[in-house]
Amino acid sequence: MIGNLRSVVLDCRDPAALAGFYQGVLGGTVDDSDKTWAVLIDPGGRRFAFQLAPDHEPPRFPDPRGSQQFHLDILVDDIESAQRAVLELGATRVPDAVDEDDFRVFRDPAGHTFCLVWGIPATDT
Image (tube, rainbow, N blue to C red; front, side, top):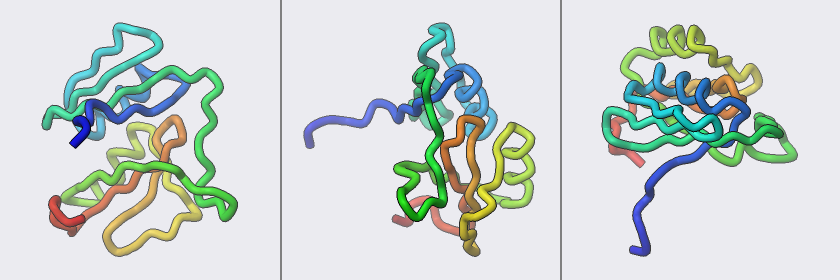
């Protein structure tokens, strides 16, 4: 092993706002004292950081000429209540994505894609 993962970092135009969105989704605490960087520590101790990128352009997905590059899978117990909650926080459904019986695709307020997944054990790969 070379090292340990410290943080997952997302570029965005408003770090504090995006950290607040994910705090609403995952829980935890946010340090947004630096206007160019915000960090969410989720209840499991994982670090999600949000970095100011004034020219950030969200990935286009689905797009046959490219990929989404990266996304989060967020395990939920009740997909319908989780979907209502993320939409109230500012997420949007990805209308052209193919949803399956165990996941639905959304965009966060900065345009990064994430999936709500259910019915899958947390330890499945």
